Structures are given as structure tokens and as C-alpha cells.
Image (cartoon, rainbow over all chains, first blue to last red; front, side):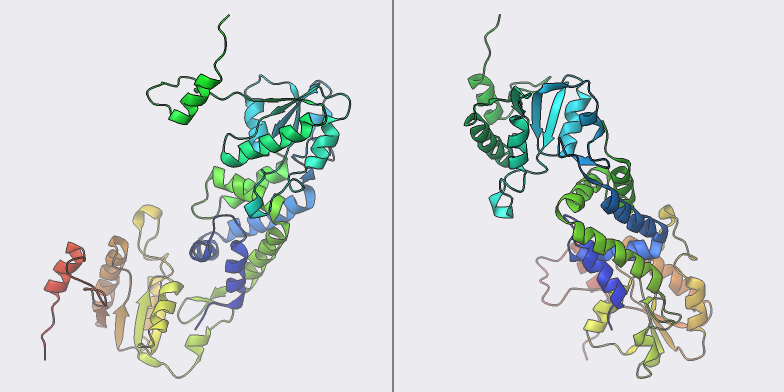
Length: 199
Length: 199
């Protein structure tokens, strides 16, 4: 006695989702077939629709349904500033601050040699071309302050600086409302090291 | 600046999966579009295939591509025994013991009034009909020993006993290889209470 083959196939297919192992794939398949067939049909259509429509913006490399995304297409951004982020979520977080008015380049990942993600996978050739378009004056690296994000920032900065491009990195330090008593020592050490003169 | 609408749609659709909230749905959508478009297309087809082909066995109520599943269709099982389980996984675990040769009835859930799962949702009307078919002599309740599984077993047993059907419950006690020193006190108390005479 085993599960019907189209169920086995569904369980196998669900495992392409990140963080979904055999047990949760089986739980998901049972749930969909038993309690949410409408949701399952909707998901199938949404997957197909997304695959069909979503590509990458030719300018910033973020997801877009048009050849150039809305943000890159508007003419009211400062094209002299190019902010490099790992993922579209990061771009959206930066936009929510309402304090940046330049352009973006989305790597769609971070350097991670163990996962087979090298310079080509994060589209550094395109970033390099973009940064050398004659308009960009400064590249702001806004990758995460994780080990991989740091390594990516380091690699990208070396690459750009060797071409004579001005590169900066978003600041690291205590968060807003951060208390010295509760902040981790690594952050505190960096905040000390990168202290700024009070004017 | 926001995500393209077909991406938003996909993120929303992914939330029909159990245990998937807005953040992991977004992570899944990014992963599929960025790193596994093949997997996403395959998942869409698997969902549609499963929805189209998979129904429930008319006899045991488990998932089946045929009107009657393989297990119920073979004539070599003991039709006098009917084992009631919560989910198809439980059925498969019991089959793997190679120690049961009767038939099954799969509730496809457990009583859980707070989630809106009552007697009708776990198909007790069909179970009752099946148990009174004139062939079944004993119904074995193999629901989980959880609060909900216990409540389900209690409810089902009352229902069946009131119709004069013989009902039994799988035993509870120390697991194989279980050491008294390490077993929880609830299990130990039950093992004491349900002790068997040594012959």
C-alpha cells in the first residue's frame, strides 16, 4: 500500500520550496487535497502566471513585469547614486525610509561559494557596466552585515575601486534606541571604531 | 515602489500552505523565481495533476486515484476487522508493521471543534454505515494518543457501542526498548493501570 502516484509527485514537487523537507511536504499535500483544493488550484495558476510574466528589470535587475521597472523608468531619481542591495526586499526597506533618491542595483543574492553562488550568479558584470555608464558617481554598498553580505561588499568594492569608481558602505553602529548595556560586543566594537567627530 | 502584481499574487497564493506566513511566502516566491523556475513549473503541474486525479476511496476514504483504492480492492484482507485511523500516513505506518490484515477507515482528520472539525468533517456517517455492513465484527480505534485523538476515539466508540458494535482501542504503554527511568509519568501511569496478567 502506498500513496497514489500523483500524490507522490505533488509531495516531490513541493520539496522545491526552501525549507520544506519530506515530512512537511506530505503535510502540505494532505492539507491542500483535504482542506484547501481552492487554494491549491489558485497556487498552480499563480505559479504559472508569475513564471510567465516576471522577469528582471534591465536596469536594476530586480523583479519586474516590464523590461524596465517602475522605479528605474521614472525620471525623477538621482542617477548619480547607485545603491547595491542583495534582494528586492532590501530595496523596499530602503525605499520605506524615504531618505534615498538614487538608483538601485539588486544582486539577487550574495556571494556564497559553498552554495555555488559566485560573481557571475550575482550579476557583477552587469553591475560593473552600470557603474561605468558615465552617469554614476558613487556606488553605495547596502548588502547585509552578515558574513556573506560582508564578503560580497568587500569583493564588489575591490572590483569597483580598481576601476576608479567611488564606493561607500552603509554605516554600522548602535541601532536607533539602542542601549550600550544590551547591544552585542561586535556591534559596540564597530561603533567605537567607526566613531564620528562631533561638530 | 512595490513588487510586480503577479509576484504579489504568488506570495498570497503560497500562504495557503500550512505553516507559511507572509515572510516565508515571500522567501519562497523569491527562491522559485530566482533559483528554481523549473521546480516552480513542475509544482504548478503537480498541483493540477493531483487536483484532477486524486479523490477518496469509496470504501476506506483514503486518497485514491481510483474509485476504490488498491488495498480495499484486493480480496485477501480480513473484512471482519475495521481499523480507524486519522490520516493516510497512520495507515501506512500500520501497514509497515506487517501485523494487521484487516481493512481500514481513514477519518482524514480528528475532532477539533475549535477548528470547525466536527463529526461530519471526519465522515462519521460513512464510518457508521461501513461498521454496520454486516461483515465488520470489530472496529479498532487507532487514532493518536493526543488530546484530540483521544477525544475522537471516545466519541467514535460511544457512537459505535450504542449501535452494539464491538470496539477496541490500540494499547498504550511503554514503547519497545523503553526504559522506566526515561519514560514520561503519564505513559508510565497508563502502563501501570493497563497492566496485563502474565500467563
